Image (tube, rainbow, N blue to C red):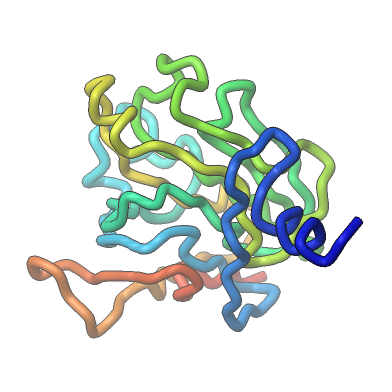
Length: 188
């Protein structure tokens, strides 16, 4: 394998798809970070029947502000579950925090169209590692909401979860977060 092939293998998958580069940001074992850049919304504002009442955990919604469509790991841990449609993923940290990242509302009905998984169940991932890619255009053309939700799916295992996703950067009066910004701090 020549030098060009080594570089190419870092940026292109064996199937010929572009591999997104890793994001680098400071992490702590008790902190869940933003997996995508966008406008932060509460789960109560997400137009879904399950998320606002906390059935999938405690966290935030993020309305993407870019069309890049890359979800980065918000924590370091092991992939505990992925969907066949590649629109959601669960990562379990060494500290026992289970983080669910879900792309879109109703996107399960797209049957994987517009989504590409980059990791599989059992993989060890680092915070900032690309987990999946998605097409905002495909989601919108299918008539679904592209909000990305990030939740701690086992909040009862902890004393409390602090929402720290407020930033001083605002877009339309709402906090704007970037990949790697702290969102949730889990307290034992």
